[in-house]
Amino acid sequence: MGILFLVVILQQVFRKMHWLVSSFGILIGSLFVVLSATPLPLIAYGMFIVCFAIGYLAVRNHRIVPIWKRILILSYVGLLCAGMIVWESMYWRAPSIPINDIERIFVVGDSISSGMGGPEEQTWPKLLAQKTGVPVINLAIAGSTSESANRKQIPQINNGSNMAIIEIGGNDILNVVRPNLFRQNMTAMIQSLKPKTKRILWFELPLIPSKGEYGRIQRSLSREMGITLIPKRYLVDVLQAPDTTSDTIHLTSQGHERMAKMMAELMGERKE
Image 1: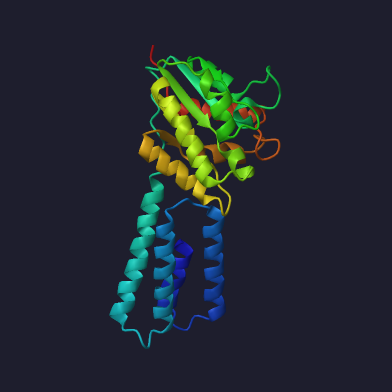
Image 2: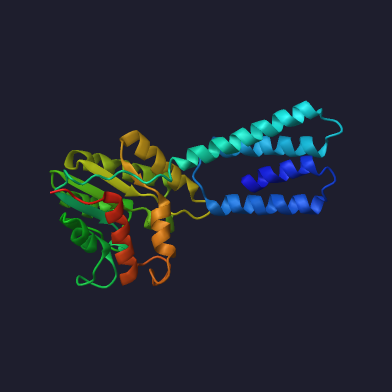
């Protein structure tokens, strides 16, 4: 979006900017917006497209549109960009995850958490228990979706001073589970976990283009139901680091170690 806004500004500064240059800037900026799959509210995207189009046309027709109107339009576009950046920044901050009052941690997840190497594999939940000193019960099952996790994993969690870490949603996207059904399943999961736990964490999903609705659902549920989202940049950092995955998704031993270290750092040292 910053690139698109820059195109409008450059059009204002260089009135005779070649149309090929500005068109290339618009193409690149639009491509980045699509590839980022940032789950901003749809109304924000709509407002930006309208404001950008008006601003671009106003600058292109500077002989007709008075300068004060152009400045006003550009100010609106700039403020909208700034507002969208501020909104997104709320979902990039490191979460506070105290564990001093936690007796057990339950991991609800899929193959990222269960691993693919059998019961002897040193998965990140096992390593997290070693790093924090808090027992971690790994309920994750490879291939799990929000629906199957509700049936097979959630019933195994007992009431107590527990923390639940949810690493679910990737298979819902890959299996094209309808967003409204994903919301329904995850709402039921969180409602079931609330009486059983003191704290619920949920890994925000790294999204692909056209799947932004799943991210919007995660963010709205986290606000409505008072749970903590672990910003997607943390999981992305693990998945994109060298030698951490075998196929861009499933973690290697280095990946599990990096994931456990990242989670332990977010939780801090437990005080006995």
